[in-house]
Length: 242
Image 1: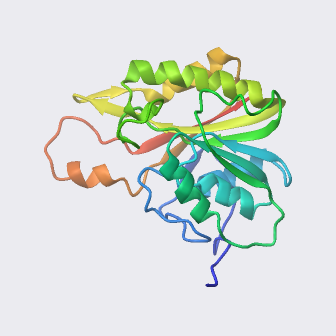
Image 2 (image 1 turned 30 degrees about the vertical axis):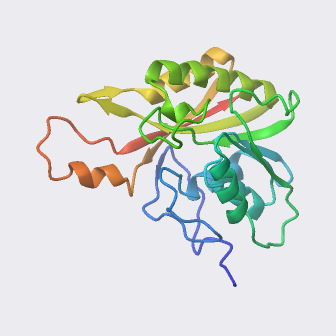
């Protein structure tokens, strides 16, 4: 079956405010995997912070959106996910032909332990971890950080940050997208905690991008409910460098 391999209209983002109402329908992209990011995000990030032939890492692979974009943009890529179902889905989504010569690898593994990757081997990290336990991506897989409370989640994120720093080449960038959550009406600033964890690991902060949130399933739940708080409608993309 013939598929469209590139977006119909695309212009790289030029400011720190990003908004993509459409989910992105080129290649094998879809919004079917809950919580996956629109391909416009990794496309923008890869075009700005990497070059053709570079090695890109996504240690929270999900449905494979980052690696699909890496394949289309002629980047080599490694995708890691602790859930075997994500590996199977990503392999399916990566099963298409295009003219690039990208080397693409997926691996069932833990983002807190990337020991199979040597020090200073990755040119760009482009990843989208779970937002603590907002969405559970498995029932009981040991090491799945989407099952953890905030305290344990950030204990793991700190380990993720240290591993990211280890495998990334000096002078190269690491981009991470995350949003906040509410608990009993109060904001839990997941984004700020994650940012601090990566800074504590030794990264420097290059950019803070605010992404407008669209197509969030929980919005419909609250839209007509009387409430004493504003609905969260933004996410952060932190771009760190080593």
